[in-house]
Image 1 (cartoon, helix red, strand yellow):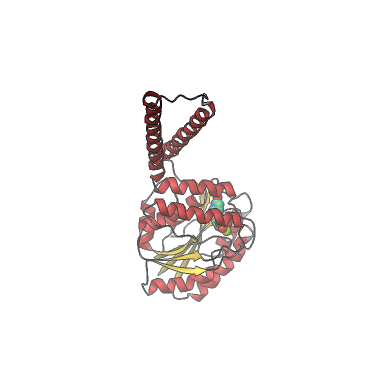
Image 2 (spheres, rainbow, N blue to C red):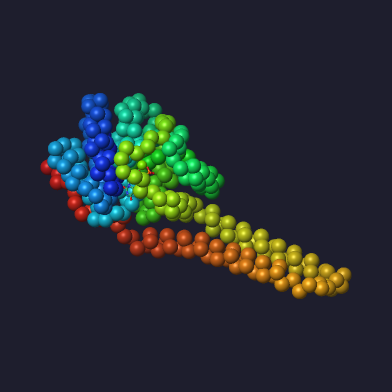
Length: 313
Ligand code: UDP
Ligand code: MG
């Protein structure tokens, strides 16, 4: 039985040797199974690719893909999943934040057929800026309210999956990938293992606040059309309010004959600005979806491979 471990790497020259050592430990612990380590170099600007090639030259279980530029972690994970030949397949970060030490017990659980997916989840966000945790939590609350599939808070991309799950994931070849949603969408029996937040061993996080914010918008737009409905509701609400207001003024002026002494300039301006803002917001929402359609319609590949390891067979 073959187990594939996929590692997306972007500027990870310092973490990779540490991770590789940990993966070798896992391999020797689970001696009754074969392993392949797939490193996907996502257009790193440091020496990551030579570190990977160096490891690969000494270890026949190591395979790699080198992208022609940075295509993002989603593309790197997808490339790895497509390449993986294993019966069980795991994705883990290069920075040791996804503890490789959990893998042997995950393999055991799959062997016992306790589930089809063993997924890790952080129970703490220790060591993370509080503002980031706050926005992350709010994001999960929001997306779970709006979507049909449940996306667990604290769920990482770290998971061990059976072949059938990975086949289902690869079959979804949409361009704007939001893996956390895709993992939930394909279904199957999931068992969660919990662990404390671990800080990365070396290098620094590639996710700035804005990158995460954009990722959150991507996730929402990719998995639900609820925001479009929100625009409709708003429009409906305001139109009704305007109608009631009109009736009220009609009665006041025509029947009760009360006339305003003050021209009512400020209120008009406020309403104008407010409605204008709402229209712009609704247009922006539409734009998000139309943009997505544009990108999907172009059918561009999700990544371009510059180099791959040579297979002997
Ligand atoms: N990563 C990647 N491409 C990118 C950004 C990140 O392949 O454009 C990889 C990175 O090398 C790491 C994993 O994705 O293995 C998670 O990245 P990071 O640790 O920076 O994210 P965080 O753990 O802070 O969410
Ligand atoms: Mg990390």
